[in-house]
Image (cartoon, rainbow, N blue to C red; front, side, top):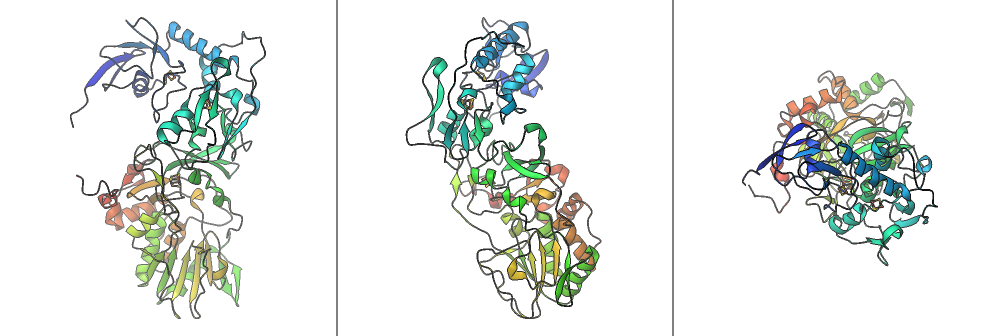
Length: 526
Ligand code: SF4
Ligand code: SF4
Ligand code: FES
């Protein structure tokens, strides 16, 4: 393909070079200049309706909407000139005419672009003395509430449903100062991808029912994460308030999820706050499980495994680091590692190629397969007297199996399943919100997630526990950081060769042999 022609221009005195066809707004971003905007969003078609992005371009007769104006050779653009600032101040004044003084009770306060730009370049007072327009709050279906009075009619939500979900549900009803976002008759936002309108809305007009009144934006701590709820591996931000996960939002990644999360993923964070967690290491003494020191529990587990075959039931929600170390335990004992995975319907997002809620509802199915675990509907097959069953954070909640007599059981888990009550040793581990690690998505992309909150009690990350277990079995000396555990994986498995946390960054990289995971329509295409 021919290289695109490059255009040189100057924005706020800074030289910028971008491909032909780039908008001035996007070109400015490359120079670190954010031109205020409302209706523009890089994941949606350009509408040019809000006029918040007006800038002054020398030799142009009028101010230009920078989202809808392509760069030109030699252009000189002024973003903060008095003329441009004055125009945007006027736009803000119009937008605020009917906007209620809601910030103290608005969920969006603290992360609202109307607040931000008004603070940055709006008027300090209002000249509008008349009563403001009032419309009631509307339930738009799904997870979405529409607070009509706060809407600035940017139409991002309408364009998302029309062009990306390709299921027209929303419209601009009425005209002039009566205009509001309306729903088509008999339609609502129960679509599995509709929750994205909540983030797309630049103000507090579209709110999540799930998050309503849960926290103020400035109370939240945020951690870069990966949605663990299917094999797509959408990049996300986990937000916590005082150590409790209260929201999951999309984090953009052009190679995986663009700017979006499905509703099942977005709202699927409550299991991270389960209350039935194992918090202490246990070992059996005199027929009962009693809390013990970590060292004692690890020694007991290593003693159980000595000279025995380990049959490992692993969760495909475990990190690559944990699965790699678990595989080393399996290899030391000439054992076998299996996993099962919950499946559901595939739900694509029509406007974004290769983005779907995937049928396999677990984050690391591909990682488990690459690392040598077998998918099985009968994961305890062949388990018999003299074997050691290692239950690695798998509950088999829908079909609890029975453990044959004569089998020792080690639980390495966030919880202790009742069918494994006969466990001899229980090693408590953290869940993905409480640790750092990586998952491999269905296209073979290895992506990091970071720690969002502390783990409960004495629970430790699975890679830490398994590194120590291997050490207790006489192999290595354990790992103190997830980075070190990942380095061991990179050194020990060819698919992960040459990878490190630094080289993965926060957007990930494909495994060395990722072409075998390409979507069917691209398989074999060079
Ligand atoms: S509801 Fe939000 S996204 Fe939709 S038009 Fe109004 S301000 Fe824009
Ligand atoms: S598509 Fe999968 S990974 Fe993405 S948000 Fe939905 S459940 Fe999470
Ligand atoms: S962002 Fe350019 S007109 Fe709305």
